[in-house]
Image (cartoon, rainbow, N blue to C red; front, side, top):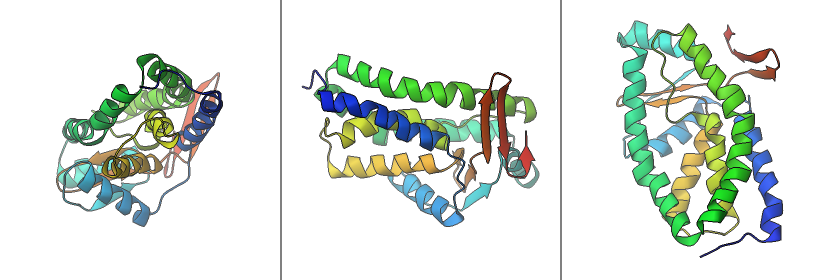
Length: 225
């Protein structure tokens, strides 16, 4: 049981904050090929699902219009279906097993320390000033909008927490669990993700993110806010 971080490990904590903050605030677009590889691995190894067509939209509003016009479905129905399914599979296939390994090998004060020094700082730069205001904005602009459980680059704080324990060799996990974590973490290259039974909806990340005293300014391709 590890009950204390070494000085070298302590000095690396800010590096993981920097790494995952950059990932979380990235506006770099992904290609259809990249999205398919990431989603298909995610579907098969994390969600226990056959691969489906991956539908990519440049912005959440475009995704909503397609769902409404082509499928006659409400966004809330799509969102809640994806959220409940994804949450249970992620918990049972990757996050639950990974968390159990951590709590059996790492003392609670160390876990809390890593959370406060990686997750909290990343959330302070991504989740609270960007993701939450964006969620509120989309709820105002898109009727029945539902934020997904797997929210791509905005999930960076959680990935950073597990990444530190794994990469620094603090927790021993088998090859299968490590491979699943890598697949899960690669979803951070995408935008919002809605895996459904017959297809997976993925949105591109914002093309521009600005935070200031005046509030959040976010732009998506073809849909400036």
